[in-house]
Length: 148
Image 1 (tube, one colour):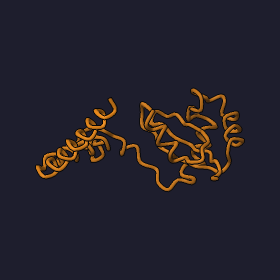
Image 2 (tube, rainbow, N blue to C red; image 1 turned 180 degrees about the vertical axis):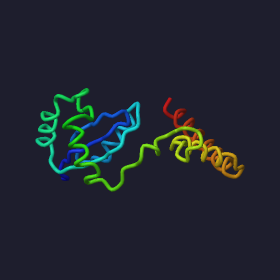
Image 3 (cartoon, rainbow, N blue to C red; image 1 turned 120 degrees about the horizontal axis):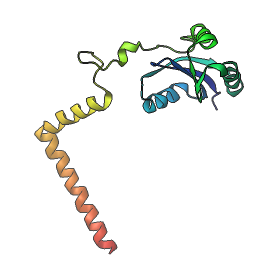
Image 4 (cartoon, rainbow, N blue to C red; image 1 turned 30 degrees about the horizontal axis):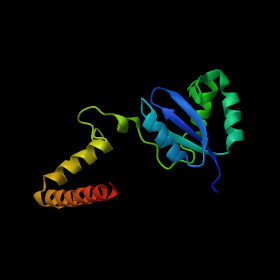
């Protein structure tokens, strides 16, 4: 069983999240998926829940909400000291920019959708998949008929 780590996630709006997880990168991805603004994993530290609780107590005066802290005073010093610790790469905020002309402006869902449209435009691909879909529907109907 893997040991827990303390992770530090930075939000583009200037807040810092200090939490604990066995898989900090996965946790950061989950936080990112549920965050209204871009976030990035900036540090992974050895420790666990005792170290996380100590940090939460130390930075209580800068607490924004829950595990989120304002990047000021002692939190800013801590952030600067451990920035990049235990993390291979930290994406630049410009990679989160979705303005027109930015090479990163197409998100994964859009890229997958465009790729699916391109595949579906191919007549051979479409014929193959429509045929398979019809066969599966015929099987479903026949199973339902037997059950009744």
